[in-house]
Length: 168
Length: 436
Ligand code: SF4
Image (cartoon, rainbow over all chains, first blue to last red; front, side):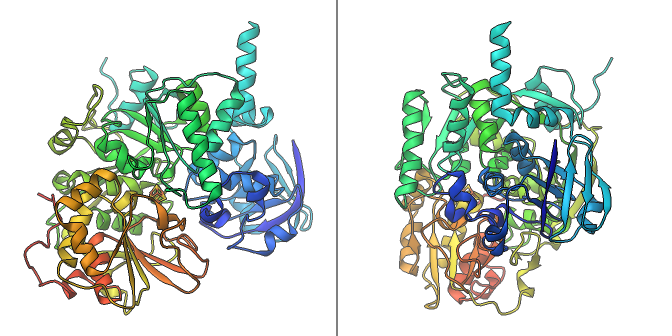
């Protein structure tokens, strides 16, 4: 899988309340949630983000609550992939379960600038900053997670498993 | 051959995959004893569940739905969310759906009802599901999709975490509670200091803590990034579950030679009442060192500190006193049972006479939901667990975190203060209720 887009850069310990404030959680429509993604943290994000864009952060991205509305809002806003030094545990699970890929790379997190054009090769764990003409490698995605991504998330994955079992 | 030594966390996980041993880093599929969701996370979980294509939940006695966040429904969208839970509970004939009036904040309610027991493996679509580690269960928060899948299969994949050991010893200072111990820990290791890891709390101090204090500590393991917080069950645990347990259970303890990624020791005689300053729970300071911080609102409640013991502490301090005229005090007993008990003990009357607003159990202001949302520029001191920017309302508001004693005293003073500023130093009752 190859992805390409503009970089939106954030700092460390970006929490789930920053990604999607709780006041919008009285419903769970992805399109509605997307309208408020990063609203308190960086209001211009939602106005400028385009389909395919990539989010870049420092350490511990997505800490805080278990709300799946957080990766859901980012995905619905068009974000195709998130690169960070590290991710909070529940956010990590939730993203892969929703089919949103995450990559860990300290080098990329330090070197890539806001607004850079970046290309990501998920299978090879390669991050190419086209603006700076630099290449970085990410921690390989575990095989089980890759399977989830290929199937489009945990639910399609389980559905497929059930169908396969039915056929046998 | 002797089995390799294991921690309590590893033993519970091993028991739930049906293996003799598991080791950190291993990816396993575990059987779950209980799956929990609330009015925010259940609608997405129910949607995920229905997309899988199974008709029935894995066990109607082991799926628990608690509408506690925006309830009693604060607006029409919240009411619609609750309706989804209600209808699903009915269609699936769930034994444990808690309607308003019997409800409470999930993480206080479930132990109270005996729905979670030592040695069990519990997952919840709520990050503070880690609370049940206070009674020696393995419990952890997941997202809605995981929960939906677990409702269908009764299983969950996870990675066996490494364990960190925190040993607490020494004499407990006046007005210090479990909240101060966990804030101290988070202040020490940081908000990702235990990322992906199990936090095991032990030592003589933990053995003296009442269940409320243990739940408070395990509750905030997630604020250090932990997968779970856990304590070995003891007589205090057994006493708590004696009249509540609805199923048989099993006690696990760590082997003496179990492996820990790191061991930390804290002398609690050096820990005094603490406060976490905005906007991150690790920004911890001794309350005497925060300077003059005037506040607009104090909230006493939440899954962290809405226990009866917490209300008792607040009651001791507020008895016969008045809340500062510049400030609002909101008190939320965590469950109906706690509310009833507080009423019986005269605490609710003390609160009302002091000028506090007492609410029906709800998460409410803890997540900026309702019942006390902050305006721009306002500052709150809360006994909750998160002080992220905008957590309790406007992005330009501030949240400070503390235990119930500091919160109650500060409500009287109108600024953040040590309880000794309003109570006689070393006076009777400065020990937290239940502490042995
Ligand atoms: S009281 Fe606060 S932290 Fe606890 S479950 Fe409710 S919203 Fe979450």
